[in-house]
Amino acid sequence: MTATNLSRSAAHRLFRLLLPIAVLAAGTNLSYAQATREWQRHFSTSIAEPVILQVDLSHGDLQIAYAREGEVSIKLSARSSSGTEIDENYFAAHILIDQSGNKMFIREQPSASALDRSIRMAFQIDVPYRTQIQTRVVTGKQSITGVMGPVTAQSGNGDIEVEYVSNAVTAEAGTGNLDLQVLGAKIDAKTGTGNISCSRAPQGVNAETTDGDITLMVVGSSQAIIKSGAGRIEVGGVRGTLLASTVAGDLHVKAVPHDDWQLKSVSGNIRVELPPQSGFEIHAATQTGTVIVGRDDLEKPNIEVRHVDQKANGGGKRIELHTGAGKIVIS
Image (tube, rainbow, N blue to C red):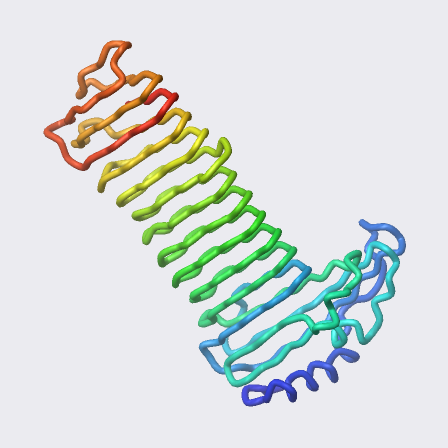
């Protein structure tokens, strides 16, 4: 079927016609109560690239991944744990799938706001590599893998995973963990309550959580901010500037200082591990804690010293470490 030039209304009519003949599975899921039922629908259409995909859902899990060129394939499933009947017209009554040229829109009908929350929706969308994605899910998990992007993913309450995207990524959750891996452009990641994990992002990440941990591994110039709580910041292999701050949590950085670092904690400990023979300038200060130096190329202060300003191996990039009540360890 070819629907490249379908109007939105025509595409919706086509979807309604396909539903009754596209049942992939119906029955009882043995891992749930006996009343639980599951239905699946499959909708496939050819589409010009680059694809622009927008998804707006209030309740459900969403998975988007690369599968093949020139085609978008959508599988929807609904599972009821309360015995609510899921009949042949369920999806057409609650979900809109519209296409206009290379743009595809998936969203809930206005009437879906009163949807029985015992019914769990799930969307599996296969797309070409050259796809731009914008999603908003109020409650539910999201997973996006293997596309060119850019990608913008928003969640009110739910985790977001994004992997193998070439262009920029923006991920934001009210409550939920953000897991971002192997991304080719700059990343903006923000969550209210939750952890942020990012690895193999050479263009760097701006990461912010109100309450949670931040872990960055093999990243470019980055910023990591924990606004409250006892969240921990862990950084390994940063390859540019680093700005990291937390309120009550600890900071641990292990990397080669390719550029300047600025690490701050109100009451947590700070530890930096630098390779032997590295050249850098260290400026460390704690108000009520201690500064511990475990390197042969830096002078070891006595226990009463709370400020250290030294150069190692002729100096180099500037490393600033500040904490109020915690200790600072340089090794």
